[in-house]
Image (cartoon, rainbow, N blue to C red; front, side):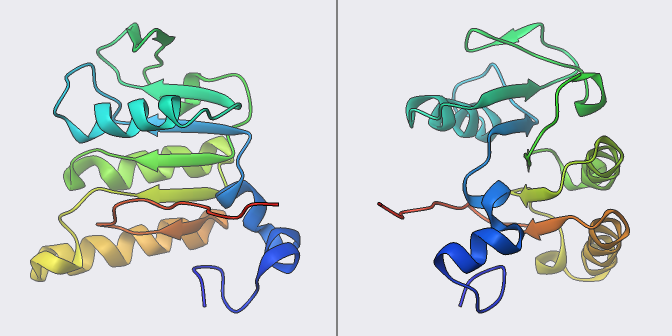
Amino acid sequence: MNVCGHLEGDALLANGGADLFRPRSVAVIGASREPGKVGYAVLKNIINSGFQGKIYPINPKAEEILGIKAYKSVLDVSDDIDLGVIVVPASIALDVAEECGKKGIKHLVVISAGFRETGGEGIEREKKLVDIARKYGMRMVGPNCLGIIDTYTP
Protein backbone atom coordinates (compact mmCIF):
# COMPACT_ATOMS: atom_id res chain seq x y z
CA MET A 1 0.00 0.00 0.00
CA ASN A 2 1.21 3.52 -0.68
CA VAL A 3 -0.08 7.08 -0.40
CA CYS A 4 -1.79 6.82 -3.79
CA GLY A 5 -3.78 3.68 -2.94
CA HIS A 6 -3.11 0.13 -4.05
CA LEU A 7 -1.44 1.06 -7.32
CA GLU A 8 2.18 0.10 -7.83
CA GLY A 9 4.90 0.65 -10.41
CA ASP A 10 3.74 1.84 -13.82
CA ALA A 11 0.08 1.77 -12.74
CA LEU A 12 0.87 4.22 -9.95
CA LEU A 13 2.74 6.53 -12.29
CA ALA A 14 -0.02 6.40 -14.91
CA ASN A 15 -2.58 7.42 -12.30
CA GLY A 16 -0.93 10.66 -11.21
CA GLY A 17 1.91 9.42 -9.03
CA ALA A 18 4.67 10.42 -11.44
CA ASP A 19 4.78 14.05 -10.37
CA LEU A 20 4.83 13.03 -6.72
CA PHE A 21 7.54 10.39 -6.92
CA ARG A 22 9.39 11.61 -10.00
CA PRO A 23 8.78 15.35 -10.21
CA ARG A 24 10.44 17.49 -12.85
CA SER A 25 10.28 20.54 -10.59
CA VAL A 26 10.11 21.06 -6.83
CA ALA A 27 9.34 24.15 -4.75
CA VAL A 28 10.59 24.12 -1.17
CA ILE A 29 8.26 26.55 0.57
CA GLY A 30 9.98 27.64 3.73
CA ALA A 31 13.49 27.06 2.40
CA SER A 32 16.02 28.55 4.80
CA ARG A 33 19.52 30.01 4.62
CA GLU A 34 20.25 28.80 8.15
CA PRO A 35 21.94 25.42 8.67
CA GLY A 36 20.08 23.53 11.36
CA LYS A 37 16.65 24.61 10.10
CA VAL A 38 14.41 22.00 8.46
CA GLY A 39 13.91 24.22 5.40
CA TYR A 40 17.68 24.31 4.89
CA ALA A 41 18.07 20.54 5.33
CA VAL A 42 15.25 19.72 2.90
CA LEU A 43 16.64 22.00 0.19
CA LYS A 44 20.20 20.80 0.69
CA ASN A 45 19.11 17.14 0.58
CA ILE A 46 17.28 17.70 -2.72
CA ILE A 47 20.38 19.36 -4.19
CA ASN A 48 22.78 16.73 -2.82
CA SER A 49 20.61 13.85 -4.05
CA GLY A 50 21.48 14.77 -7.62
CA PHE A 51 17.94 15.83 -8.49
CA GLN A 52 18.05 16.85 -12.16
CA GLY A 53 14.88 18.93 -12.26
CA LYS A 54 14.20 22.56 -11.42
CA ILE A 55 14.40 23.59 -7.77
CA TYR A 56 12.61 26.66 -6.48
CA PRO A 57 13.44 27.81 -2.94
CA ILE A 58 10.53 29.88 -1.61
CA ASN A 59 11.34 32.39 1.13
CA PRO A 60 9.98 35.96 1.20
CA LYS A 61 13.15 37.23 2.89
CA ALA A 62 15.80 35.69 0.63
CA GLU A 63 17.16 36.52 -2.81
CA GLU A 64 19.20 33.30 -3.05
CA ILE A 65 19.56 30.13 -0.99
CA LEU A 66 22.39 27.62 -1.47
CA GLY A 67 23.26 29.27 -4.77
CA ILE A 68 19.74 29.05 -6.22
CA LYS A 69 17.50 32.05 -6.91
CA ALA A 70 14.78 32.28 -4.26
CA TYR A 71 11.21 33.47 -4.77
CA LYS A 72 8.86 35.21 -2.37
CA SER A 73 5.93 32.92 -3.27
CA VAL A 74 5.18 29.99 -5.57
CA LEU A 75 2.97 32.49 -7.41
CA ASP A 76 6.13 34.39 -8.41
CA VAL A 77 7.58 31.37 -10.25
CA SER A 78 6.73 31.59 -13.96
CA ASP A 79 7.34 27.88 -14.67
CA ASP A 80 5.06 24.98 -13.74
CA ILE A 81 5.84 23.25 -10.44
CA ASP A 82 5.12 19.54 -10.02
CA LEU A 83 5.69 19.18 -6.28
CA GLY A 84 5.46 21.61 -3.38
CA VAL A 85 7.26 20.73 -0.16
CA ILE A 86 5.79 22.81 2.67
CA VAL A 87 8.17 23.53 5.55
CA VAL A 88 6.55 26.54 7.24
CA PRO A 89 4.89 27.02 10.64
CA ALA A 90 1.41 25.51 10.84
CA SER A 91 0.00 29.00 11.37
CA ILE A 92 0.73 29.91 7.73
CA ALA A 93 0.65 26.44 6.13
CA LEU A 94 -2.98 26.84 5.04
CA ASP A 95 -2.21 30.07 3.19
CA VAL A 96 0.79 28.42 1.54
CA ALA A 97 -1.29 25.39 0.50
CA GLU A 98 -3.89 27.75 -0.99
CA GLU A 99 -1.15 29.50 -3.01
CA CYS A 100 0.09 26.10 -4.21
CA GLY A 101 -3.42 25.27 -5.38
CA LYS A 102 -3.78 28.59 -7.19
CA LYS A 103 -0.40 27.97 -8.84
CA GLY A 104 -1.65 24.63 -10.17
CA ILE A 105 0.70 22.45 -8.12
CA LYS A 106 -0.88 19.00 -7.95
CA HIS A 107 1.27 17.32 -5.30
CA LEU A 108 2.23 18.44 -1.79
CA VAL A 109 4.45 17.06 0.92
CA VAL A 110 3.59 18.88 4.14
CA ILE A 111 6.44 18.50 6.59
CA SER A 112 5.06 21.16 8.95
CA ALA A 113 3.86 20.00 12.37
CA GLY A 114 1.09 21.54 14.47
CA PHE A 115 -1.93 19.73 13.14
CA ARG A 116 -3.91 16.72 14.39
CA GLU A 117 -1.11 15.65 16.73
CA THR A 118 -1.67 18.79 18.84
CA GLY A 119 -5.42 18.24 19.33
CA GLY A 120 -8.16 20.90 19.29
CA GLU A 121 -7.14 23.70 16.92
CA GLY A 122 -4.64 21.42 15.20
CA ILE A 123 -7.38 18.96 14.27
CA GLU A 124 -9.43 21.78 12.73
CA ARG A 125 -6.34 23.13 10.94
CA GLU A 126 -5.69 19.70 9.41
CA LYS A 127 -9.30 19.40 8.23
CA LYS A 128 -8.95 22.79 6.52
CA LEU A 129 -5.67 21.68 4.93
CA VAL A 130 -7.36 18.57 3.54
CA ASP A 131 -10.24 20.72 2.26
CA ILE A 132 -7.76 22.97 0.41
CA ALA A 133 -6.07 19.94 -1.15
CA ARG A 134 -9.45 18.59 -2.29
CA LYS A 135 -10.57 21.99 -3.60
CA TYR A 136 -7.59 22.13 -5.98
CA GLY A 137 -7.30 18.40 -6.70
CA MET A 138 -3.90 18.15 -5.00
CA ARG A 139 -2.50 14.87 -3.72
CA MET A 140 -0.94 15.40 -0.31
CA VAL A 141 1.46 13.51 1.93
CA GLY A 142 1.40 14.76 5.50
CA PRO A 143 1.11 16.92 7.44
CA ASN A 144 3.75 16.31 10.09
CA CYS A 145 5.80 13.93 7.99
CA LEU A 146 9.48 13.51 7.27
CA GLY A 147 9.06 13.48 3.49
CA ILE A 148 9.07 10.76 0.86
CA ILE A 149 11.64 8.75 -1.02
CA ASP A 150 11.35 6.73 -4.21
CA THR A 151 13.74 3.79 -4.03
CA TYR A 152 12.69 2.39 -7.40
CA THR A 153 15.65 1.30 -9.51
CA PRO A 154 15.02 0.38 -13.16
